[in-house]
Image (cartoon, rainbow, N blue to C red; front, top):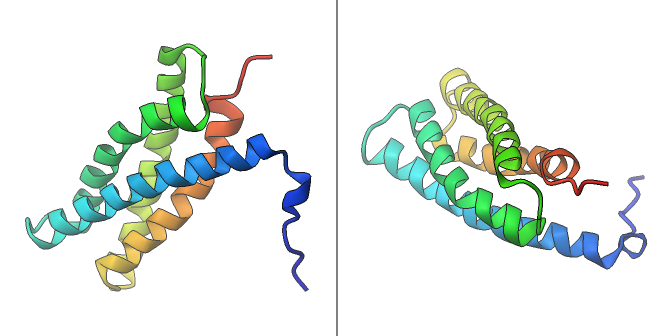
Length: 138
């Protein structure tokens, strides 16, 4: 039997960070999904190209919101920006791989790849942003 997460053991600040991350992530995911679907369906770009365009567009929106709203960082913006860029380049590769697998290999609809990307990538991203990119200096 699966154990349910006990939120009573989480500090309120951590819960609020997760909520803020989810809000920013939802906005970024909507931007990704719209740009991906429009560029693939209406402009005829290859799904992997559409994924790159959509991901980079959402990333531009995401960094200032995650830094200033979600993690409320006061660290060096250039250092954090470089780390953030590295994380997102890795996420971009994961996104493209997911799209390639689902659309090109499995030949499922583009929408299925969009759903997979907007579920998998944010989970990985939160952990890395919290523990490395925006980690407060001690």
